[in-house]
Amino acid sequence: MKLLRTIQLDPSDSFVFASAAEPGEWAVPGAFVFWNADVDALAGKARAAFRSGLLGIGSLGWSTLAQVVDATEKDREEATALLAERLVAHFGAPDAEAARAAATEEIGFAASLSDHPAGTLIAVHRWIEDGAVREQFRTLRRREGAEAHPRAFSFLEVEGESEDAPAEAIDLKVLARGER
Image (cartoon, rainbow, N blue to C red; front, side):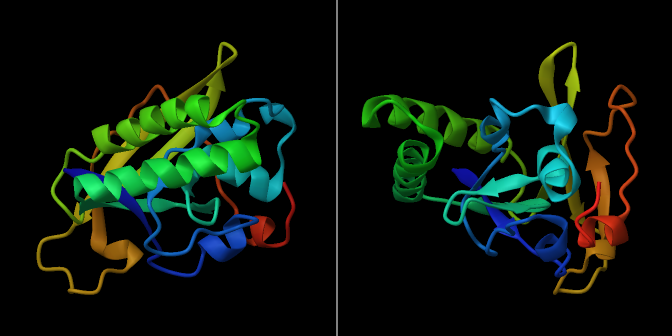
């Protein structure tokens, strides 16, 4: 079985997101965080988290990338239990049973995204279309002959790019200053 863990190839997550995930946390897509948000009103770091963040369930911080890793059933169970705790404590789940069901579904979705060789990187792009949140996931793999310790530019996108997704430019300097 495989799951997703957060990864940082450089320090950019620490200034792109209000709260960056710690490297190595279990990760889920995390779109549920924006369930009641007015996405059009999101600005700066909150908008970046909506648009391209994967949620680290330990810290509830965001990561631009997650890595496919081998996992055990015990790992999946621990990730599900931790996410269920977070859903009750931070997101208003009505009870532990409802939180457990939602966490099981979210961890299952993350596992479905992990059907790639270990080490593959996953990125997300989110947008609103016809009043619904749409997500597009991309996979990145190490370029042939790339160094053992990866850097962002030693990866090559291999699938998931769609012409249907709206383009949106990212200005890292503006995000670092907390502007929209």
